[in-house]
Length: 165
Image 1 (tube, rainbow, N blue to C red):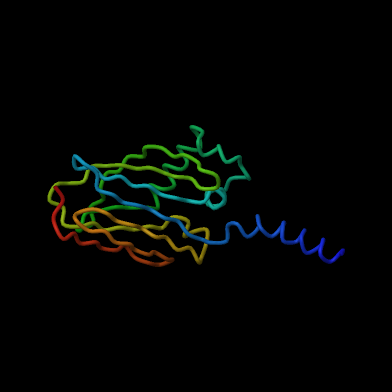
Image 2: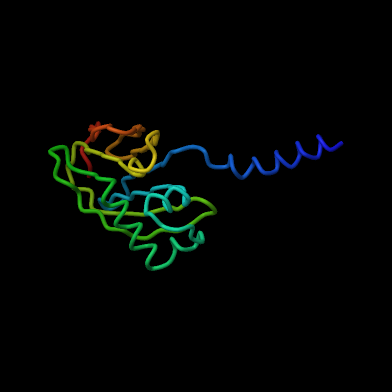
């Protein structure tokens, strides 16, 4: 009976510890009406605490003005969208919100008319986790594709079947 109780306790403790073992982030780059780009990043709050060298903070810290500023700078420094010739696009940090253990970080910017593609670089959390893998989904210029970034992955080129409008 004791061994059954011990096993049940160990399983109960293992659940939260195993809840986040994946070193991954997801970003969606999406063409919006009126020549706009919308970028949404999904990052684990626990990873952000470590990447930003924060003590354990309450999940709503990232919703605070200080948390918002820190997130905006961190993501802007590590996720870059550029024209095919390498000139960066101007993106504006819109804000962030927390959903359980995930932080959604939003950026937007103009999508230049006639753009034939993008150069994308995602180094989010790469400095924290050597086995970090970032997935970037792109829906723009008549294409829908996914790119995978790991440590040392250079910026990737995406060509559009049709120029942006």
